Length: 313
Image (tube, rainbow, N blue to C red; front, side, top):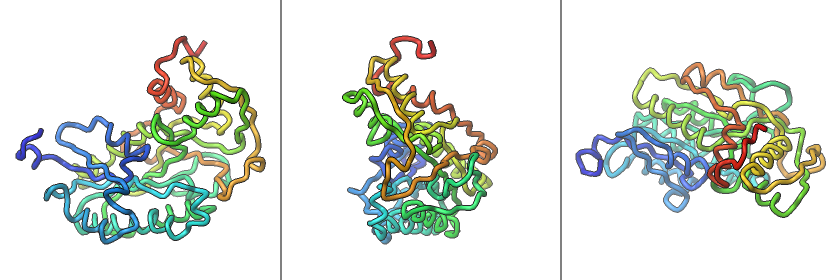
């Protein structure tokens, strides 16, 4: 569909954070015929500039109105946010507010990406979408501000909270473990924070599914949803599985010693429990997240190639 008439029938989705893990996977996602993504990053739009955000949404794609916005861009430097409060709030709260207001005016839906950090992590079990929020730091509070702005904007919306995002791109825990493990035979990794790793590719597929449904079905469900890969693990347990699967592919391997969070202090406090319930997203959108071990295998296939032996043996 390259001619002008075909382009006029295309449904164009605006994606922010285009160079990040999630933005990269939204660009790589196999969108159905008739759909196209415009993924932008800071060089094309400063998320601190609310007037520019409003103009971009109102302007559409080459004069064609946007079909939807996926707001994936964010200030994700969790520790730095503790001392860079204004910027974190500008990007994580005011930018979603501007996007949602503009989407409401344009009568198009917005899918806002949020985080497990809106919870304090102070109990066991998976967090449900209706559980009370109580962020522990600036990052979580600013992301919650973005949620509230979207919820009260009047725009049709889906807010999707996620956690522990990893991929074959950018900076993330999987790539860090492979890099550090290549030169260190033994590593110390936090073993008392629980959660579910999330493949950026699997998350992108879920966001695309939701966005397209919101565009095509005026009665599509709206509200807050959770997406991560299925299954629970600690960071140390995740590291051990990374090295087990890496070794099966001829990659780096290291021994992992679990340590308490108290032995790895950081400026920002992390939730001890980041497990997210998938009940709402499965009920409303039929999305069943695959197991995190499977998602990890897909990432390592891209980074290292297929296993050289059966990793289940």
